[in-house]
Image (cartoon, rainbow, N blue to C red; front, side, top):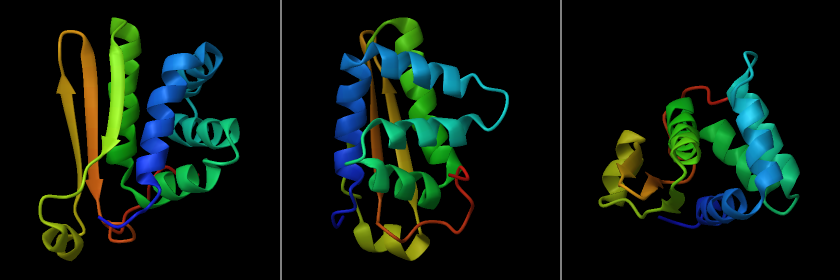
Length: 134
């Protein structure tokens, strides 16, 4: 997959949520909101670090809601379970097929002591659906 910033965002998110308890608490509060939890989460994440904000906004706007919700739900489960969370961008196994079918893949591996998330997609080649409404 060509560089999309996804790699940077997922690395940043994995590290930030691990080391910044205020960020973690604010994100839980955003996700628990009865009004637009995904939009609130996206805005909070983008506002946390101006350097990563454009990538966050692009990912939440362009990727299907189910991909970003799945990522955040997996993260939330790791917090609730008190286990490690890691997210990575993974090069699609067949980039041409991913691009042709506008495929986005989110894989969540739940282990005893960690949750690992792998996100695969081709930049700008996503299903034409609305994401989170950032």
